[in-house]
Image 1 (tube, rainbow, N blue to C red):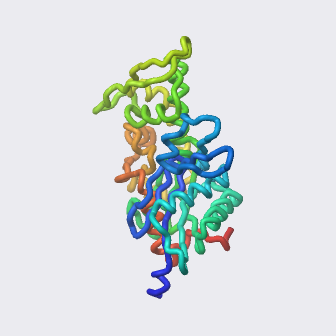
Image 2 (image 1 turned 90 degrees about the vertical axis):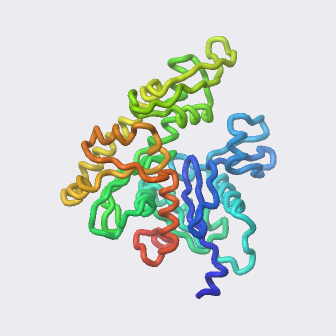
Image 3 (image 1 turned 30 degrees about the vertical axis):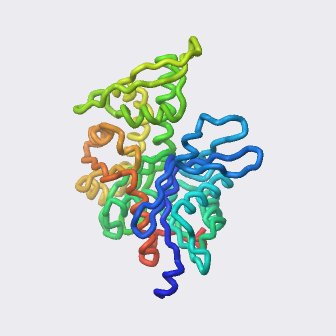
Length: 343
């Protein structure tokens, strides 16, 4: 078995709408934006990850940038394959001889059978011999150190780039879940629209993302407010580039509607929770993971809405990939992993 392990390359992939992370030997070896740059004439992939992100919204006619995942699932099959291949190549040279690649890939809980097949096919095309899928809330629960096999209910709220996954987990399974397609990307769009409506200034996706990171907030009043952030864009009245500054309270108004929808989904999931598990959740509280968990004041806002304690995971961006890595090491033990035969 030791000899066989020498020829096995094991990797865990958190295939996210915004970022893709890869873990090998318990270490995050790749953490890159989920984007590829393609030459329109030849169809060849020019850049993947950060390099492609630098080109995003700055390309000429011969180059296009593609985000292969939309709402947590593969929207562009070919671009997804070349992205996965490019990211795996970033890990360093692969052992070409007798190489048995084993993968665990993370997927949203609301995914369809067709979308699952697309993930399996992409993995197959990058020479994976053994592929398992794991639902995001389950991976997040493992990643933050919860014992998912216990008969105790835990609620996980994973706010990613494309989807927000809300799930109650007990006995190695998801008892009830809500998956809504409102998450980081929607927040970015809200900010873009707000800037256009309120300030007559046109900004791109990347600038909007920077605003979200620097002054993004779920509450109009914060105890430790961030400094106002300068934003450059194009004036819609004159067409001339200009700069304005925005405050966190403005951005909290821009994001209010989307956050309310996430709150409604959390309340709906709590409503569908069996009474015994509901009593566990009253004790254990709610766990926030994913990039959206970094939004200032979000835990306080959800806690006020649900009257329950809300905990933000340590390093929420990597909770899902850490859990996927744990599942990779224990594929024989965890029954909730999906393999090709069960699809």
